[in-house]
Structures are given as C-alpha cells and as structure tokens.
Length: 457
Image (cartoon, rainbow, N blue to C red; front, side):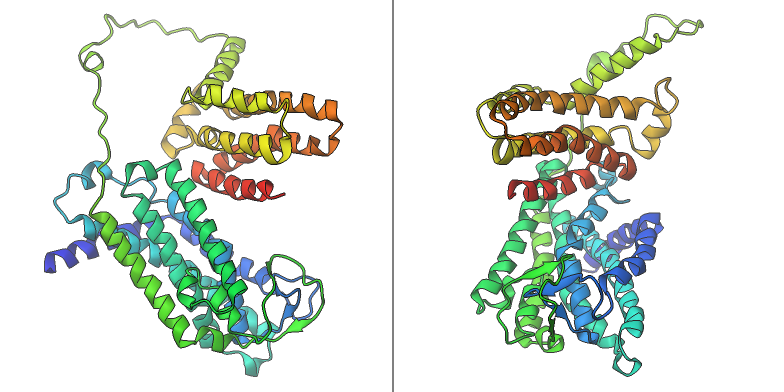
C-alpha cells in the first residue's frame, strides 16, 4: 500500500508540474479576471450574462458565486476539456509509461488528480476575481468572500473533476485517445446538459441527477417555477428576480450529490485503469531498416519549379484530407443527395459533420513546435497554410455544388448563406483554430457545438 501511494504521489507531481511549467495555465489565469469583469455586469446594466424567466438576477455575495459557478459548469466545461486535451499534457511519454512496472491505477489516478487540481487553480482565480469585482458591485458591508467562493466551488469543482475524469478515462482506450474521444465527450456533455435541463421540467428530481451541479441549486433558490435559463442572453422582461442562492447551494441533498460525483469519478478512473490498453508500437518494415541508398552524391538536388511545387502541395493537401479512402464515396453520395434533398436540415449538417474531422486534423497537421520549425525551412513553408486553406475551400465548395443547383432551381435563396457557411466559413474557422492552437481538438469540439446548433435551426 505504501508503494501505491508513493507511485500515486509521483505521477501526480509529474503531471501537475507539466501543467504549471506551461505558459497556457498562466495565460488563462491572467485572462480570468478580465472574463469575470464581463460575467458580472452591474445591477440594472444594459446587458445580462444570465437570466431566469427573462428576468435579471439581484446581486448578492451568494448569487455572484452561483452565477460564476453556473457559467463555469455550463459554458466553460468544454473549454476545460480542450485545455486538457490540447494542452501541455496531450503528449504523454507512453513509450516508457506502458512498460513501467508501476500500478496502472496509480498512474491514472495521479493524472486525474493533477488535471483536476490544474482546473481548480483556474476556478479559484476566477472566484477571487469575482470577489474583487463584488467590491464594485455591492455595498462594502455586503461583501462576503467566503460565501462567494463556496457557492462557486460547490457547483464548479465537482463538474471540473468530472471533465478531468472523462479525459483520463478516454486515455485508457485506443479508440478514444483521438477524435473518437472528442466526439464521445461532445455527446456525453450534451446528454448531461439535457439531463440537468430535464431537472427543471420535473421539479422533483433528486439533485444527484444534476451531474454538472447547476440545475439543482437554481431550482432551490426561488419559489417560482423556472421556465427558462438563458446564459449570454438578454433579460427581455426587465424584471429583477431575487434568489436565495445560499440555501440552494447548502442544501443537504445537494451537498451529498456533489460529494457523490467527486468520489464516483475517481472510482470510475480506477476501474478503467484496469482495462488500460497499451499503445501500439509500429514496427519498421525490414526493407526500410536494412536497405539504404546505393550511393550518395555531393551535388545539391535542384528544387522543383515554384508552380509545380504549389500544384503538388495543393494535390497532396487534397489527398491528406480525403483519408481514409472510404471518405471519398461517402462524401460523393452525400453531395449527390443535395440534388433532391434540402440542404438545410439534411445535406448541410451531414457535410459539415463529415468535413469537420478531416479539416480539423489537416489544419493542425505540421503545427507541432518541432514540426513547424522544420516545415518553415522548406521552400513553400510560408505559403503552406494558404494552400491548405484553398484546398479545403475548393473541396467543400465542390461538394456543395449539387445542392447549389437544387437551391437555384427551387428558388430557396434563403439557404445560400448555408452554402457559404459550409463552403467557406467551416474551412476558415478550422484553419484559423488549428493554426493558432496547434491542435485539432479545439477546432473539432467548437465545430461540433456549432454543428449541433445548426442542426436545430
């Protein structure tokens, strides 16, 4: 048992140090106070970040913490997943970890604890910023930092632990370490939000069903039935609603539910560690190992012409996007269906979903710190991003052409914006996110959230 805890402490320390040595967590910590400024508008201001039943929320220390906690549990949890999946710990030294005699349970639990603590650091920075802003939003005698921080932490801390747990669980299986895990996370996140939303409809559901912890305390803060919860939307009625946020958060059943999910996700991580699937080592082919060039020449190899290089680069980008090859007939079938089927609601969402994965992967390809330095030395290094974007736009626009013919013939010109959004907007968005974040995870997850919104238009 002593060896287990020593291994757990070692893995936790190593993983946490990787987070703390990265500039990403400190950049986010600096951005938190700025974000908190806009999350907590003045009472009676001209905009609202969160409204209930189309009414503004009356500000007090507990409501400020509750509001920050709800925003973090609903809006910032996907960003927390992106931070973990695309951050400094995305590349694990699995070549050594998979061969270590240490217990896999200690390794997975250590990673989960470190990831959770790093997210909690950002949560506390946001909470402290909320306390400072409350000095300007409330009378000085009403400012109670402990109340504000407790309301925030009781809502958001278990929710962030669940996000870190999902990331750790996905890392135990081969099919979930990449795009498969991102897609599964999107649907799990969406299902948990819908489950909490159903909490408002029933009015008598147990708080334990509210995994993200934002619905149960809200339902217990007011005697009114909550018909709508709008985040980043206006309070159209202009009324002011007073909440007893402290009572909602400190309810015994709610406190038990937060502890339950905090413990449960740790148990799940330990269970999935028992079915950990090691990474696959790709052996080199014998001819590559044993065969070398017949001779070496001291003469420099002439570069291809600029025009030929650009065309070759364009064609190679198209080939890399259309991998695996099964993508080609699938995309052609969906595109051809646009001749008879409506673009909005059917063909458009199908194309957007199919193109999100190869486009996000291609946008981030060669963007690692090491590879970008190497690719910058090539003759076309500076123009590779532009050629990549052109290739994506050409491909997506070509797939939309059958639907464009159908739209033109039927006169449904209101769907022309859908063509532009998928043919031009999707490649632009994913290329920009892939270039800036050096990861396919951010673009993929954001595109999936936008896709779900587009599907429900």
